[in-house]
Length: 447
Ligand code: NAP
Image (cartoon, rainbow, N blue to C red; front, side, top):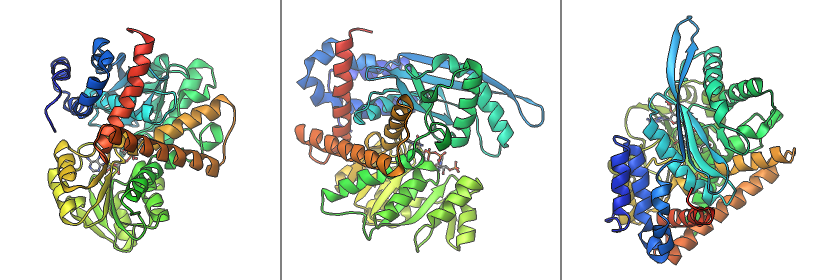
């Protein structure tokens, strides 16, 4: 990372001072500010209006208690969060994460990233994120339902079609969205479809929403490979994680002719030389909610407990699990083994050291805010369908998703060219998204 522009340093210092201990939030802010030096020099009005300093302070942060009763009759208490970061482009929009590692700083890092990601989609959505330190793993369906009901009993006051529209993220899939929506409807007595996205197809959900983030990531990376005359066809690919994003990234890579030879969960990774059997993986992870070792056992593939998935040789790597999962050592191993492209399906999975390794080695690198924007883009398409009481076919929706992903790729590449750093998708994504949000903030005054 280069030294920050002198106009940006005091802003970053204030972020550090005002948000002590929130290291992931600091990391996300620094990554964006690192790209903005040439942008603020070109647009002095942004400095005068203190646009960046305002952007770094969420518009609203909500923290609440989530008490509920487990299957044994014990009272459990967790913490709920919703950070409504920026509404310059539209109602707040962003997922909910249920994972024991969730702290306010985690939600702020994700909410901050979401502002720029949502801007890149070109759709009218602001940035937000939320969640809880609740761990849904090994909980019964009824426990998940009671937790979601308690969570929504507070959250409902803050959300709405024109205010804030949550969706899923780690630990929050179709089942949780169903319970959350049911409780919202019960409390408000309103069937307000567009208050949540990621709903079931039969009750207001959109085709392709489940697949969108993973499919979109693969489409973005295919576009990136094409700029160098390549493609997924015939290439070995490694995908970390085996959740929603990872599974559908693998499915699309296979459709595009690549072979995914390894994937993981938090207990280890599977190496499957013949290519991951995505249908079996879906059955293990989505239907039976079992561990990846179960897949390995049934498939006759090798399971490696612990260990680094990035040691598996591949041409393309797609980190699709969680933040900071791909570090400098992992990046060096990938480069050593001939990796030519990395696409972030997860949010900020690559550490700054690893990004530096890829930059120096000339590896094509797609940042998450561009590469994984397909999920939120399709959520916005779900909102459009809800607003017009319409439902589109799978083919039509997938066509829209692909068009949006190609558009994001084109915008990032063109912006990188404009700032004389061709192929730098990090700068391209940050600068293109920032200018769009900054223009809207300038127009809307000091609020
Ligand atoms: P998910 O369905 O809950 O899956 C998460 C996967 O990551 C699981 O396989 C999980 O394994 C694994 N994982 C979690 N923590 C890990 C760790 N510390 N080490 C190794 N593996 C770990 O979540 P998801 O929706 O796919 O989200 C994955 C990432 O994509 C997140 O960064 C999320 O913010 C981002 N994202 C998601 C969407 C979306 O539409 N869902 C959109 C944009 C970005 P275990 O089961 O063992 O925990």
